Amino acid sequence: MIDTRCALCCEEDESGVHLFVNCSLVRRVWYWLHLATGLSCQFASLDELWAAGKALRNAGDRSVRAKFTQIAKVTQIYVPVTVWAIWCSRNNVIFRGETPYAENIWELSLRFIQDWGRFCAGATSISLQGSHLSIQE
Image 1 (cartoon, rainbow, N blue to C red):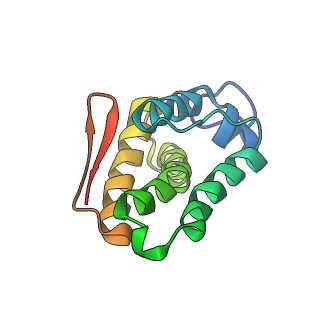
Image 2 (tube, rainbow, N blue to C red; image 1 turned 30 degrees about the horizontal axis):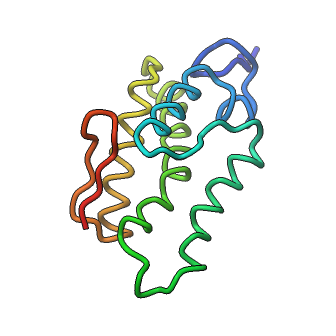
């Protein structure tokens, strides 16, 4: 029989809403992203999660392109990169037998933010200083 419980918390059956919004480990990751960025990261549904990511991406569309800085470009990737880190962490638990920890998901998310910010947005340095995410253009 296939185990349908969430691979990260083993508390409830896994669904998209549970995995990306309601999982206890994932809620901590969203909280840490909130502390690091000031973004509101409390989502009630996948629609809210998707809308938050879309709102960040659209922020640049309303501004003058010449003023669209690397910081604004990096900000756009926070939500989708964190979703990707959650998905990769879940797969690492299932396929590689890793032990799920919120700290590991958060560290992977930060690594992705740094890599994607550097390669996609041209930021020279992205680091976590204390609990605040610092971006250098």
